[in-house]
Length: 576
Image (tube, rainbow, N blue to C red; front, side, top):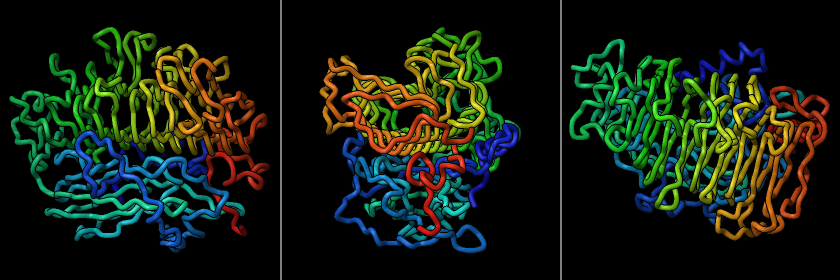
């Protein structure tokens, strides 16, 4: 089994503290969310401009369709493959988001350290979700494991499908030195498949270890003789550690000294990972990550501002600022437990944990923000420009106070401007014990402005946004600033979401928004009513009543009619 992460521990603790149900029927409800990205054998070059997509002609709808998942004492009931009517057909082809074959040789997806637990998520954009993941050739990597299917269990007349921390994650508990050519396959509900090639090198070269309690900056920074601080990495002359990967143990100050406050991927490592089982915490007092190169990764740790964090430049309040030439960003299994400013938290200009700036080169491909947790003082998570073939999946807010924001970043997950395209926002959960203060100037949980070919699917969003132009989901379908003609062939899909209690949708004829550009299907909106307009094509949505409990699970009175048919929960009747 995979070692527990800080995120998993925190989810359990907060769930008990909030006295909420720890086991929901939602596919994104996990102890520690997990999904991922994969590698393919087609090398498209460093820009990643040519996506690797599933070939419908290669689909094998009957392959492993009846395979069971071992959940302990016996096989799980039913099948991973859902009957027609209980899943949604693919809106976009399956495209590999992470890891990518064109990734740098030093990327985490291509490197492991002997004897140290290694994992990557397998992230797929588009497709008919949920997927099945399989190892078809381990390349001799004995013990390599993948979370194949959603967990299934019987629940009051239904077989309910739920995520686990392992679902969609590839891991190796004790890697053995050597080089391994691994092949995976991802299958969607319609039988389309993606073959995924992963070339993994296990060795000690290119790894650094930081342990403030057991380390010493006079050490070489190895597993057995770690550094004591990140300051030692800053001090290395001539960019000596630029293409390295860093494991962190315990509480690690990110910026212990003036002049070394920011971690810049242009001159320092681009891979930062929590050491397995060490409850790694990376704490910032002033600085942030400056991402200006490809293949940036942060994973398996807690990242927070210090209690006395002070924003020293007076604006643009971020934990990560992502600039040009930044294809293949991975944010996986990170617990963002404190994002706040001193002395203020609002009106600082495009404030967000992760700011994906508008790149001069025109686009940013293959961004995966998956399996992360937001809690405590928090705010806008992403403000994103120019994303392509990217995924925001199984992220969760639990006990978060969304106080840090401004009117320029008005949604927690904000797909902003510069024409984002081919993006999946899937199975995210903002439902339990969160605070949504109006003073923060946020007005949506998931938001979109000036984007197309985007899907919002299987999300559970319970917010207090009920004033004008606010909502759990807030969509501006177009803006004159795009300079782009919108057609019914470049839609935005909103399907199988469970929402409370308002949705805000805006568009304008002057923006050349064609009829049917926004497509709403099989969603459930508690209390509120669905907006109507010529550019909205709506089908089989529910609204106007209270259908869910506080955790956004269907109430008993509505289960027989709607569970597994509408809203975010995935289930099949036992007798069906």
